Image 1 (cartoon, rainbow, N blue to C red):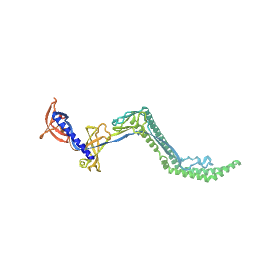
Image 2: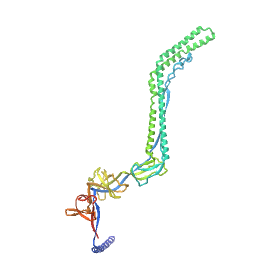
Image 3: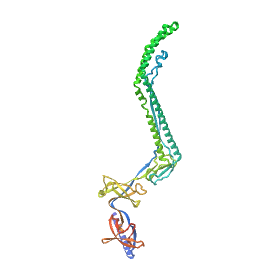
Image 4: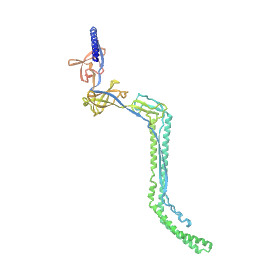
Length: 483
């Protein structure tokens, strides 16, 4: 039943078209045909033939972020002391004149430099004054995106300058501390060397003093006539004889310690100054880091303007007037004008004409009268086939010349060049009149009339042809007739 209805409709359509054809025929025979002319210009350029495929353009997105940070590092240095051995001297206090306590005391401690560092990082707070871009706007690298309030710039600059001054002060403090450590270590070294050289003489003097003290007391007792004074002298003699062994042992211990410090004086000096210099190095690094922060700040925002780091079309704006810049929110995002690609499918019949790094011609539906260029960056090894069972391969093209505005998704026509003649005069094939083996064109004269000019044709891609016998800029006529 459905087939019959369709046949009926078809018969009706055929009948109607027959009536229309009859009326049109009689009308055309009754009306004379009018001649029209279209003007084209002889141009200079390339005549190219090749395989053309179409696909959507892919434009990579780039984000410009705010990552200017302030790193504040404080460095302090101090001298710490640790015990270098048991104290010498101070014994035999019962001896006249203080006994061994009168001996020069050596340094009993080892000085060393302690270094303390602390770093803190915080974002420099900059406040947006005016935003000068909108979504969809095309910008070039270096264009101004937004301006920053002068007040926030002054506050940030003051903070960064203070960080430099603090680091420089820490460096001076570290250098002073280290200088004092070196002086103290040198004094200890000199003292130990002197005491070591004199150790034997000091020991012999101490032993002689112990013996002489007992001898003097015995002489005084023998010559004493006062009973009360005699009792006191006898008590002192008993005490001196009782402590003689201990005093002689203390003198020997002092002697041995002096020799030990003498023999190890250089090692003890080296231990004392082992860390000297590290505090200054860290402080110098802190000064360099703080100065680098200040320099980076001045380079980034000294004129109060934030400039585009990329060229392309603005696809997003992260701030408005009064906002504070932060690392989490992008200043702006761009469709990268330097990373525009299109991937087209080329059939196996044509893939042999495609090679890596080949130059290609690219046109866009949005710009039909302009031609751009690119190159082949990749040829896929995997194939695909559609309903027609035709095998094709993905070919990626990087577009190096682009129109002013180009967005992802726009259609691009890619022509893989198989033959090309460059820098020649060319014209539309429709402007050429063929008469036997000769070719002619109709050229418009300065007076508005036309002249027939014989020409020679070269390479043609089917739509335009290389031509000789005319000049660049000549106006040619394409004639036809319409009813």
